[in-house]
Image (cartoon, rainbow, N blue to C red):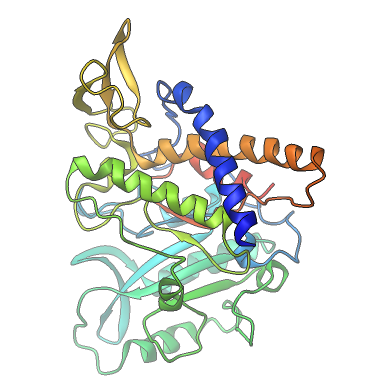
Length: 365
């Protein structure tokens, strides 16, 4: 298994590197969207996949701080509302609940997002009723400090979720359900109580190393290292244990910086805003930030622009799919009894655009 993973990783790295020079001048301008409609429309994309596929075998587009649409450029991480996200094909939600007067309101940090947990569940339940072949994975996490509550967070969760008795998947001994057993249901990624058997324990995924969050964006200059960590997590999921759930949380960066900048590398949040320049050129720094685009070229002299994790990931996944096809053909021609999958796990995004969502979905085909 270790040899297979190593061989696959080296082979994929070589094939993808072969496309790097051409990609360095191209920008996928449909991978980032700050609009209310990303242009993606995939309401039933899970329906045609085999029931026997395990959750860990799927590549699922997700949103980081799913409900964070308000508060300005620092707290805002999304521009599509929840219903639009689901219609676009998003299947992993990141729901942050503040415990207020024995109820759950949706916050990002200290910023109220004009929504409640009950409202979230109503929208998801209505969507799944209309699209019963789909499933939604939902991380639930306590946000900020409790206000005026007389009970524990988990008790309020049980009180609210108990009003939706048929909505949530109920785990048995298997915490890696088959797709057929969770169609029409929500799979809870529980991130609020270590001891409970509710859903799948998110902390356990962190402990096993398949959901790392060590990708801080403190300044603009951290963007390339954030991208490198996102790329590493893509490869970890592609070559890792197929029975383990992988989550890529490094497309968004963490701690500091504007979410729109991490996602786009743009000079302002608008979808069609220009890329921010690094101030570097290929004359003095030809090998710096090799995945960032070379623009405004005069002969071989080009400026180096920032590029966000959304367009970088979208292009990377498109190349990865091509590389998988080539590798599988090579293995077949050499009579090597091995076929690699295209899994990249759950991919959490800020301001996802059409091409990025579609490229993640395409990894399942």
